[in-house]
Length: 525
Ligand SMILES: [Zn+2]
Image (cartoon, rainbow, N blue to C red; front, side, top):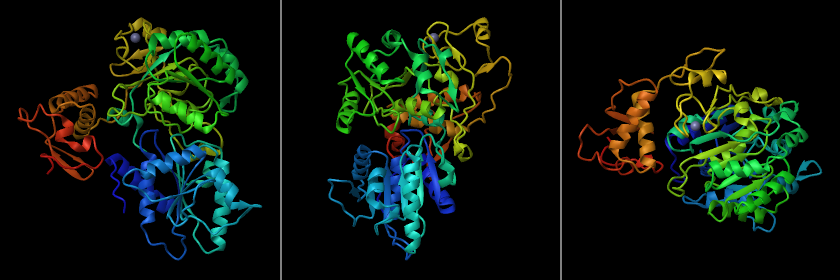
């Protein structure tokens, strides 16, 4: 067994995935980027590699991805301590077929193992993890069909399959998968410091009236027409709201992205451009540069939205009108990674929306109701809750004072947007409805406060302040600090009022808040 520790919410997701796998055989693990899907998969693959194979098994597992550079990413993360021994199946690499875990791209698998429509090798897998399973679904389906048919011929059980995706929506997913296992709510992940907070701005709008829908997405031509002529405003809006933030900009057409690049360069920014034809090495270098402060801005067309890991990104500029909630979430999700230790300068990510996308698809915090029933091709619906646009600074937010400038819109201004404010949240004037979220217990709120305080270097006293803030915010001002909290099966005493360690940092008192599985300290029972 590799000693890979996971946060309690990751361990919970792992356990639920394994249970679902045992019951349904083919499942999708869904969570936003930054939750650690690869890490959870690493744990499960490691456990599988430690089991003695049965008579109907090959003893091998596979992690497969949709592009060659992602093979390296996966191999790197499996190579981190604790190391998961694995082989890489790729041209110009020395294979290690003896390793119980293999990593390969789906194109390599299809070209090496499928010959004339038959599976032509004795290498098959008991467990397959397929990364970004919403993308290139048909390639994987083709592989799996032949692979499992060959296993049947040779007396082995069909493979167990885990698809990983932040947006489990693609035509045909329900032909393979039987169940979606959902990670923790995005808002919870943000509140607890695992994902970046977001702020949203309605930037200068394109001519959105030109958008034409076909099925659930806009036609590429209308997308391009709707956003034409925006380049001047995108520079101005970025300077006003996002200057100094490592930024990724999304554009409908290569021509738009290239024009934007010129404009941004004229404004003095260090800019790079990538599209689908950029070679893997250049792409990798550009991502590194943006991540390490050598670039200010990356213009791209349909590249960065797929499984790219650039944790420093602190601004996502949507110079595109996006037709589907999945693509919108993939794009915004590039800014969701949050690592205050490695990137202390990133405290949040802002979204500059030139295409009315937030109004159409909701905030990143609004989790869609993913369901395999919809994967026959229609779009996943987000029940978009009302938002208000600050009359002063164009921030888009939900209720109360503007999170950006502190302005509180008047009743008249809210009504002007068809909205009213009920004390906690905005509601549409036509549909009067009290927020019905269930209240969290004092223990839940205490844990949230501990994680936030621990991960931002704050003290116990500050965590107490955060706890009371959270309690007040959810309408439970009567809450008191609980005597104990339980996390991942471990119980901790909370500090009594006036304790002599109250000025100490939470990460010292409760190390589990900053390090996976680091249970211990003076307050562990
Ligand atoms: Zn404002």
